[in-house]
Amino acid sequence: MPAPGAESGRGGAEPKTSRGGGKSSDSPRPSGAEGRIFPPGLYVTATPIGNAADISLRALNVLRQCDAIVAEDTRVTSRLLAIHGISRPLLTYNDHNAPAMRPKLLEKLKSGARLALVSDAGTPLVSDPGHKLVKEARAAGIAVHPVPGASAVLAALIASGLPSDRFFFAGFLPAKSGQRQTVLEKLRTIPSSLIFFESAQRLKDSLTEMAGVLGAREAAVARELTKLHEEIVVAPLPELAEHYGASGPPKGEITIVVAPPEEERPAGAARIDSLLEQALSSMSVSAAVRLVAEATGAARRSVYLRALELKGTPPGNESED
Image (cartoon, rainbow, N blue to C red; front, side, top):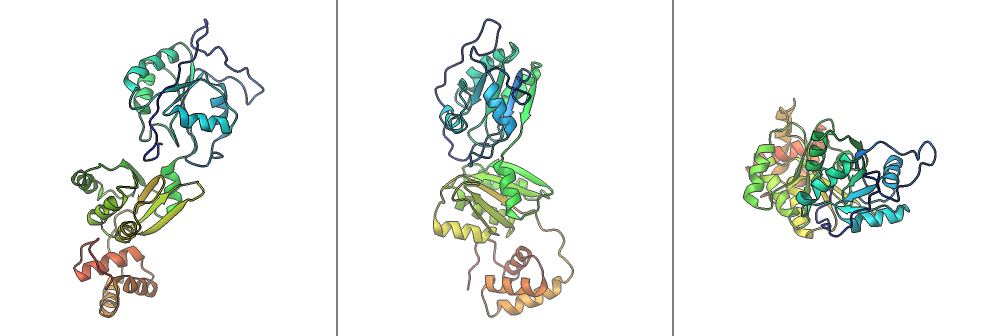
């Protein structure tokens, strides 16, 4: 899946075809069981999201033996191929040229070509134009083969420590504030963890609006996943909004994971309220929440949300005093 701010593809020449139809004139020969030529069709191939070593043996085999690689940005894909010593014809397929390029790719597939579809990073079809190509290929009776691998969605989810039994991928939120809030309202009651992609420049605003609509849910901001400067920050949404508002836009690709909505208040809620009221009379919200959560064993995010309710403070507007 492409990271926020990924480069747009351009260039890329079509491969020469042989008289037999479809296949490139320099298709490699099989080399043993693992190197055998595979059936014709479209191979939706996941590539690393940062660390070049995060690519499967099967994906490497597909990339080495396909007739051409259909890339979102040939410059990005060329760098990955160079690392693994692979040289194959590259075709560009992205938001800009998809309507004109799709029929050409379908013709190649119909003639028996083996095409590997890749995105700049991660699993194709997740926030990129590959969906229409796969849909039309299947409608034309062309075999579509998934070659799974790296995904920023799953990488962020499993490292966040948030509930992973059910999750909803919401992609990028709209750029405009009003539209973002409308989308968040629709997502508010979904009983699963929510996963978003976001740009660095909009991160603070999106986190603030998430806090206002979704409440003080625990959340994680994961950036530069699998790379040298990988960072995963976990805290209630209001704290994350405050943190990135103060520190400014971070560098790198960003994935946000937000915990599911709270269920019914657990037994012992009255005791939590009593302890919170006492603590809030003499200390800040964060200190009171920490103290009560440790004393009761309750989830910190639920104690935090209740503390804001008791103070009558909307999420995102609380003071540390």
